[in-house]
Amino acid sequence: MNPARLRQLLEDIAAGRLAPDAALLRLKHLPFEDMTFARVDHHRALRSGAPEVIYCPGKTVRQILAIAATLVKAGSDVLATRADRAVYRALKRRWPRARYHESARIASIKSLSLPGRGKGDGAYSPVGHILVICAGTADIPVAEEARVTAELLGNHVTTSYDVGVAGLHRLLANVREIQAARVIIVVAGMEGALASVVGGLTAAPVIAVPTSVGYGASFGGIAPLLTMLNSCAPSVSVVNIDNGFGAGYIASAINHMTAPAASREVGRV
Image (cartoon, rainbow, N blue to C red; front, side, top):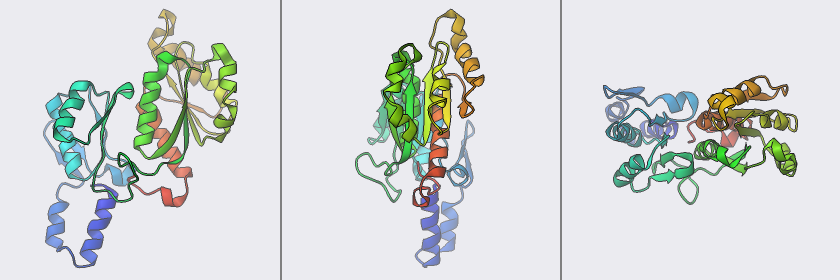
């Protein structure tokens, strides 16, 4: 159950609009629901501000649909990462409002029951400023996973793509935007030097994402991972190889901590 619905439930009980026994029935699957193949954590939004996310690889379409159904029933948004078109089509057939963010390989379903929604696809009015930078066009899929994740979690996100160190003037043309961002995600393969350069241009925290893009000596992303871990820019932190989702999630958490109090409602997703 998302925090907004739980708050409404408590208000209904306090106002006498809902009997305690009826409320107890609604809460019987809190904090988790055992589906034998998965235990869906309905309490997660209360603890961490966002509901459980579905990682699609290794799951059948039927399992993904079942997990999504429990989240939708609980009033939570659905975010399914590394989803292919088969997964999206199955979600779309059951929930016509489902969307597919193809470049990010993310399928999403926005809850219709949450208050405070904005216009358009039902997302919250975005807060703050997260900037996603990537070194080359080949890094865009991972960068898009970070961007879409952060946007679905209620953040204002801008991008600057194909600005790697091989043409440093392309990056320096965006210095004002770099220095205005609250959080920056830097996605790079090859040797991964871009994160250190960006870290030297801003006071904002930089989340570096090494990608598996590169020739043989990049070792599938290990070379940029080690470069980023050894960055001399102290504001740089690092997530795992190709983990755009993790970078977007962490950036969202940081951004909402620094956003005005009115925008930090627990459970915005």
